[in-house]
Image (cartoon, rainbow, N blue to C red; front, side):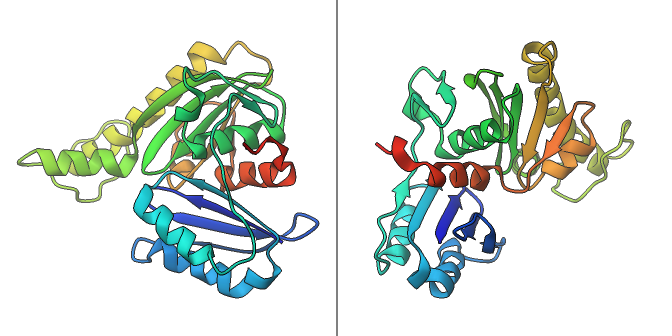
Length: 248
């Protein structure tokens, strides 16, 4: 069995795959759940059966140490994924290849394995990333912007009269709560649409692959060909686990 771990800034997601690639179990940390505790559930349930562990981690050294501690009893050496110059059908166009986040790299690998078409790979989580992958598997670069919730919190924390109260997304808000909800959402939509129109709209078969906690919300407001993927990072980690020969 293979344990795949997507350790993000807000949540940790894990998935265990069997020998034929079927999902045998999965979990995700919630807002009130410690990420290492969530991982411990996988270790307790599947530990003796695990033969491979692949991790995309972007959440800092402290959590990385907790993950190592949870995995230490297992007789398996984890693979901590790092972005590379080339691998798994993807060529990394970043100026310094390893500066690309492991999560973005894994999502690109997963998109490429899904279909060899031009992709705009969007992950809508704590931050929103918008990455251009062409039909040849070349990653050109992309945007990073605050996620929807981070935008809302920034307004609440840095202004005297704006709160973080929930609002509704609508085309023409006529109250402050709806104005904030709509502004934060449409800022994301505008960045995605801009990148797609500028770099991919003219390419046959181009599509927008979207995942993350706000993926569904963004997809509902985009007038682009969209494919929702529940866990784009885990999908990429599954590809890497199936062919780990690019490990450095």
